[in-house]
Length: 440
Image 1: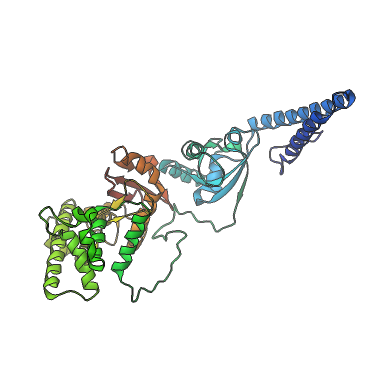
Image 2 (image 1 turned 90 degrees about the vertical axis):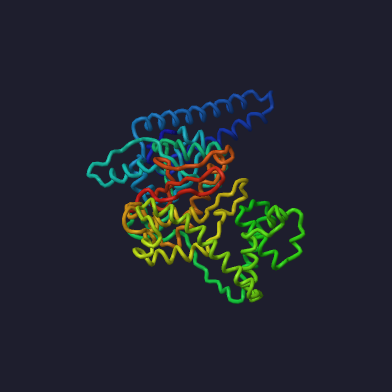
């Protein structure tokens, strides 16, 4: 342009082109303001416009021709420099590329890879001979680039040619490849906050949370309604006459449901307002709760070749005690805070299926030990599950709304912090299974 030589690797390659486009726009604006009787001025301005257009066309033709034979970023280089580290990058596309035409000159996000794709690329960059491929790369684009939902989906599921990239901006944050990391991991971007709950009634706190969710128009699952009604029967006994809650509190014969009574007695016990007779009733409900849940445990254990609880208790006393305590205290719970028509939740069966099979602290010896364990401590697994549900929420709801279950597996397994996860959610929103595909 203007007698200068340009290469696609030049810094500020498109700065002059952008400036001339502005000059052309001004020239065309000035042309419209010249009186029609000023023929010489009009002719001169037309020559100027034609000159600018020709220079712009020559530049575009030159750069397009260069890009046919060369490119700055290959699929392998992008993975080696940024993708393997799950690093956020800012991308500037070549001005005349297909990507720029579709998505604008600039986007930003994190490169994403299918399970097999990441594995192959990891092997490739560890080899002595790394190819240089101009191929499709996918990106989870940030929300502040004014892209449509269709464009965001296309970038995530189809991608763009790596050779369309002109320049990449990134931070100098420490590099860590979570995919190849060995041993236990910490959940990234975690901020630990110490809170003193001394003097706080946990039942009131739970009730406050349930009330907030109802005010927000969110849906409670049955176990949460039991909790809501039970606590309210103690703190707001007038609720027993609420016609909207009658079916949730009472059986058809007018007796109070055991599940609701259970939470009412918890509130009484927490507030030291429970009679001896009620304490015996509470003990019976706890015992029945354990028996019911141990029936679920028996089913899970038989899948490992452990055919009796006594055998399980004798062979794995620590695991037995952990499951015993959990059987008494575990509450069914919704896993996200989103306002979803069909809440995704887990129950005690979900807990057993996930923890006995894939939490190495709770895996019995034998068959379960071949299962892929989580690369996180026991206390972090529920949060990993919640993160997975949140990331997949739209896809999950799309399936559940059609009366179908949701599954993610194989190449489309969910990626998070170096691991790929398989998940199945039943059509009613209950998590059936969740586990990592591989343990690095």
